[in-house]
Amino acid sequence: MSTYSYSSDQPLTAEQFIELLQRSGLAERRPVDDRGCVAAMLEHANLLVTAWDGDRLIGVARSVTDFSYCCYLSDLAVDRDYQGRGVGRALIDHSRRQLGPKARIILLSAPAAADYYPHIGFSKHDGAWILKND
Image 1 (cartoon, rainbow, N blue to C red):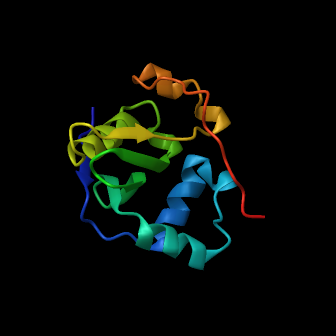
Image 2: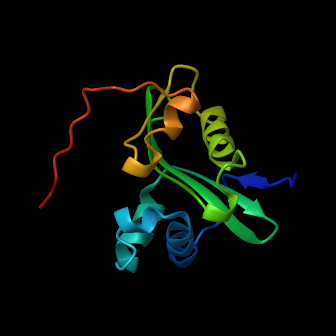
């Protein structure tokens, strides 16, 4: 089994993130055709953990958090070639280590990943609401 490296201080370009979103299957739910928006997503996230296989970006956990009470994990993307190898769980674990002991991780699951999150310890919450800016 390969050993991957994880970082919370490795710079990430919009292009690298877009390519990973495409390789992960998450691109269909993200604005990958709007490089400026993707760049802003990275710039304004305050917790970004990346996974690497050598020089290859294989995963990203992108979050917005206050580090004390809550952490919104807005993107968990793992390259399809690496899915099922524990990379997603490790990205979440590395994110959790940077949060305070009372901080909860909150996320909205992509429909295709809905069965994954209970498997790694998340519980479903029926009270989530979305206000779209259309």
